[in-house]
Structures are given as structure tokens and as C-alpha cells.
Amino acid sequence: MFSHVMLGASDLEKSRQFYDAFLGVLGAAPGVANKNRYFWRNAGGTFSVSTPINGEPASHGNGATTGFAAESPELVDKAHAAALAAGGVDCEDPPGWRGDSPGGRLYLAYVRDPAGNKLCLLHRPPKGA
Image (cartoon, rainbow, N blue to C red; front, side, top):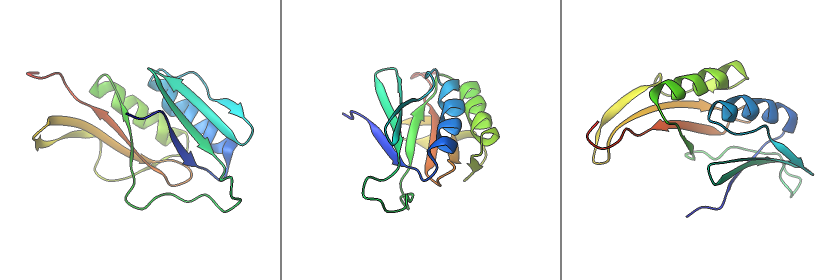
């Protein structure tokens, strides 16, 4: 459904360092520069950070969350720890299993990147697991 996700950033170098660490745990190669943007590609998806092309300051979306899939709860924990070590800020509850939604149980962790964008790491176990 989606071709890519792009988030605004005021400090591209700080964001590159953060996302190289965070997305590296999930299997993405280091970000590639293209003018005022960095791109990461993995598993058929593209993620990018950019300084706003309108020249206005970057800002995070209140109520917006960008989710990243992880293959295991341990990978969620590892990526969450890498995000915090790279300048991210923990938010919401600690990493862990969440409720009994119609879609089943989920292992989630939340963090804000250096620009304040809210990110979610999600592991969805196979049905019946």
C-alpha cells in the first residue's frame, strides 16, 4: 500500500546517526544521502528523513506514529535499546506484550527520534503462537 515514509528533521546528521543505529538492528544498510535527505531501504520498503523543502522548521505530528516491524521480541528490545543509545527518548510504556486486541497479542516498544517523531517497534507472533 505504501511506497515510502518520510519524516522531517532539523538536524540531518543527528537523524542519520540515530536511524543508522535504529534501522541497522532491523537489517537496513546505513542511510544514503540525496541532497537534503537520507534514505534507508530494507525488505521492499523505503524510509527517509528530510529537512522540509518549504524552509520551515521540521516538526513532529501530534498523534502520528511510524511503525517498524521486527521479527522477534528480542529484536524489538535490541532496536529500542539502540534507539535510546543513539539519542532517542523512551515514550509510553516499557517494551512488552500488549493486550488481547482482535488482531492478537503484540510485542511493542515506543521511542521518539531526535526530531520528536514517535516510532513504534512491533512484533506480531504467528497465529497460534
